[in-house]
Length: 351
Ligand SMILES: NC(=O)c1ccc[n+]([C@@H]2O[C@H](COP(=O)([O-])OP(=O)(O)OC[C@H]3O[C@@H](n4cnc5c(N)ncnc54)[C@H](OP(=O)(O)O)[C@@H]3O)[C@@H](O)[C@H]2O)c1
Picture (cartoon, rainbow, N blue to C red):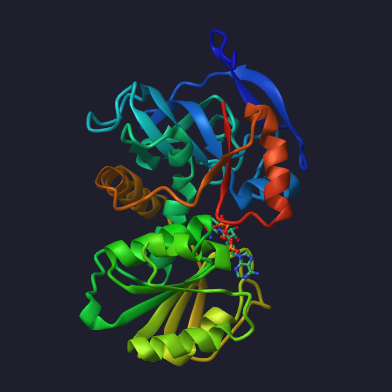
């Protein structure tokens, strides 16, 4: 797309609450001391983008630019960026700070040039496409935030002999598929997951040992029976679907060996969220406070994601689906996402 004129670039701007996003040219910003300027090649969509566009969530003023997930190439670095950071010319994936920055146009993903904090960036190997890389930032940080929220240390390491199980409800989704991979390949849990039947083989390929169809009325009993056959305790779980269901808590209540089981809930919670005695359900949040969050992101992106994409221990998931038409199709992609029913796919636009 012929998007770049001297000092300007193309952006899908949110001019007022409710949208739609409108294509405009805007001045290309200069990165601050600890920031990188990225030439964006692909942007992936997340539910929060739809809430921002439609309801003004996490937006302090207009015009705003939305979007968290980008892949592209580093163009320039701020004055205090360490020499160890990806230099200009490096292919990267990055977590754009659209909602932390409350819609500040310099920081939203849906444009051809975006500023990102250096701790939110991971270089990507040549073998990983921009499309696959763009699916990762939000999913990876949310998966890690979930495990952090329920108190699992980063160095959790079980072996098969420990008989430690974990349940991921929604294992074929964007967040759930990364949560499965971390739980199985890094933490060494025996992973049980739920998914639509057509996604079972896929979720197993990510490391789940058993996958259950959440559409079966007796799914909780099926999971409990299987865990008893396998001799597992399930003290913790990750619930990663658009609504919070009681079933995940029921499984943990029945199979936990600890006094209080713990469930990370990805979707927002309120007073009507499910409650079960003996199980604590907590909304997934990154560590509180700027410095703690930066430390978490340095670990997640600068270290962990960088290393695991090279080693192949993290496979980009679920499956990228490009909505044709570039940034001009951002509204169409968001409309489709907000309608629901996307299964084991992540919608993207290319710029
Ligand atoms: N707390 C945070 O910081 C944070 C960050 C990011 C996302 N989130 C939230 O996390 C949730 C998941 O996001 P995502 O991007 O991973 O979504 P996603 O990619 O659409 O995945 C959701 C998965 O949920 C499953 N599912 C859908 N309806 C279900 C139902 N009725 N019962 C059981 N499973 C069902 C689907 O499984 P099948 O395809 O197998 O049917 C789907 O793969 C959203 O609510 C999102 O807003 C929170």
